[in-house]
Image 1 (cartoon, rainbow, N blue to C red):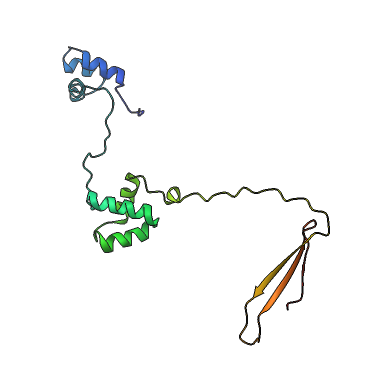
Image 2: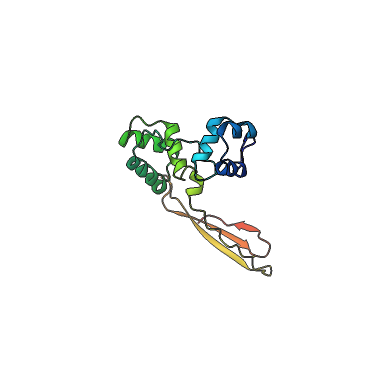
Length: 169
C-alpha cells in the first residue's frame, strides 16, 4: 500500500459495513464523503489499478500480435522492429508506443528472449609426461604469387604446453 493512503482494507471494510451517514464517517476517517460512498458501493476493499482499462494504442490487437511474433521469432532490436512495423504494418507507430507494446506483452527485454548459450562442461586437462607431442598441420591459403599451397606444422608438448613452429612446406 502507498504511504499517502488514508484508508486501509480494514478501514474500508468498516466503512462498507457501517450504517452511519457518509458525512459522519468522512469526518471520523479524514476522507471526503465521495470516498465514503465509493467504498460503500464496492463489494471488495482492495485498490484497483489506476491505469486506463482501454489503452489508446496506434496498433490494433492483431497488429500487436504480429509485432510480438516478429520480436520473438526474429529477435529484432527495437529500432529494427520499428522500421519493419512502420514499413509493413502501421506508418504512424511511435518508438515509445512500440516499446510499451513490447513490454506489455512481456517481450520488451531482448536479452531475456535470446536463448542462453550452452555452457560446455570443461574437463580438467589430462596429465601427461614430458615428451608427448601433439602435431597440428594447418593449411595456409595459396597466394597469387605462389605456385603451390603451403602448410604450417605446429608441435605442442602436452606436458609443458610449449609449442614449436616448423618450417612451412
